[in-house]
Length: 314
Ligand code: NCD
Image (cartoon, rainbow, N blue to C red; front, side, top):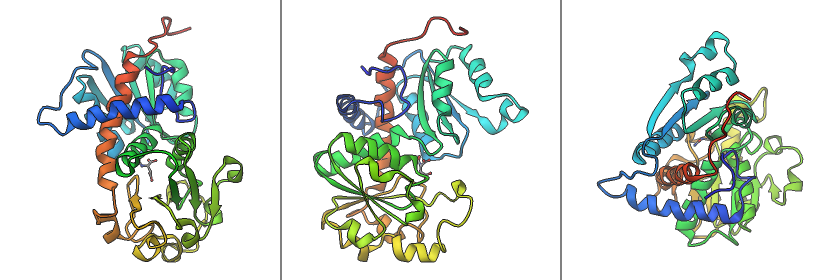
């Protein structure tokens, strides 16, 4: 069981809770590889997915996860919702809340919006990515992928490369990998490093060869142009030349280093397409597989959790 009623970020999870989630995920990895993928942890419960931002894998993953656990799953199409008629996020949430959902999965372009919403409803809220803040289930699925590939989740050197400043994936991973006592190195142009990063207990460099030296894991990030208002990089060609991962740059890492990417990836911008498909190095498809199992585990644990607030509209 988790201490919190919600999963809003990795920052609020303990090391033991992370391990508990990953251990339960293993059960679901096995279940998902069988012909019959159903179990009943969420039987009778209602899960609502509210995605205010584009998503392919995260939304599909949460939907499949809920259905495999027996929940009634509804996907709200937020573009067609009353938000477009001027209703506030909170009013939409309160309206849904009155229909008694048990799990609310929310993605929103503003950092902190999901936490705000969680204060107003009486069910478990899962953050599926809020602005540049956190994307906890992504970090958990990355952790499960690393633990399975490397046999452990501590004392590894993990390089996170690219657009760190705009990445909630990088933030959640920094929290998680730090808590599990790994060495985290951030690599990317100075313009794409968040301010105050040096205080977070991570190493920072703008040099790929230097940063990848001795890395067990190389995690690439997408250039999040939709979050940039101006010229953060000279050109995508120049960016690929200096920070795009190809075999030549990867040769600086350990010979058995794995390559990760949360998706969606821009081939030829942050990663070479052939390398991304190289199953000897790339675990990108494993990450997607682990995503369903991790989301099943988290929803299972939250459904057992410290339950519902009694009064809704107080
Ligand atoms: C990421 C996200 O939305 O934060 N994608 C994902 O969930 N797999 C990363 C990204 O958009 O680049």
